[in-house]
Length: 108
Length: 114
Image 1 (cartoon, each protein chain N blue to C red):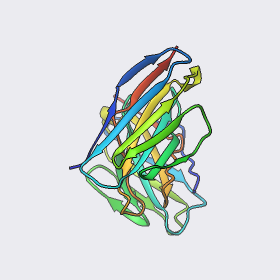
Image 2: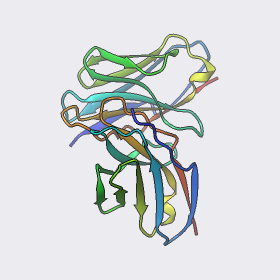
Image 3: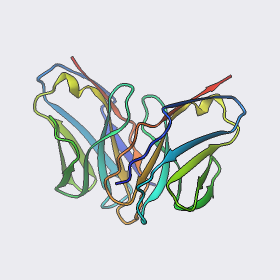
Image 4: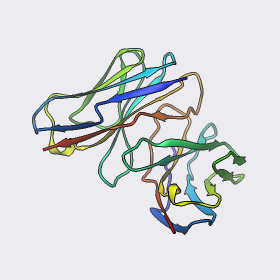
C-alpha cells in the first residue's frame, strides 16, 4: 500500500487558489489517487479521483505528473467554507488507509 | 440512491462497559464495509474492513471486534471499553464491483469513555 505525505497545514486568504501536494513515491501501477474533504465531526467526503495527467470537476482539479509519484489538488478561489482537512489516498485494493491529511484554514 | 446509516451519533460510556455500534447501508448489494477511528486531532485509522458476510479483516490489534451478520450490516463491538477507545468512529462503504472504489462515509459516532 502506497504511503502518502502531505503538509500538515496550510493557510490561504479567501478568493485565492490553493494547491495541496501529496507525495506517493511507492505508488503501484494499478493505484488511483483520490482526495477527500473532512469537516469537523463529519465523515470525509469524496472530492476528486484520478490516475494520470489532469482531472477536473465542478469542485477541484487534480494534477498528476507522468511519474505519478505526486499529485496536486487545486481548489480555485477558496471561500471560508473550504476550511477543512484534505486527505490524499492512494490505493488499488480493499485496504484504504488514510494519512494525516492537510488542515486548510481559509482566512477572511 | 445509496445511503449509509450509523448510530448513535453520540455515546458516553464508563470504562469497562460493553460497546455496540451499528452501521447499515441501503441501495446497494455486497458492499465493502469499513470501520475507522479518529482520535481527537488525529487522522483516520482503519480498524476493520469486510468484503462479505462473515468476512472480517483487522488492521490494528486492539480491544475492539467487528462482525457482519448481514450483507449490508456492520457492527463494531467491545466487551470492555478502555479510556483509549474514546474517539470518533466512522463507518464507510464502497462498491465492491469497482476497482479503486470511492469511499462513502456515515455521519459518525462520537464515543467518550469516562
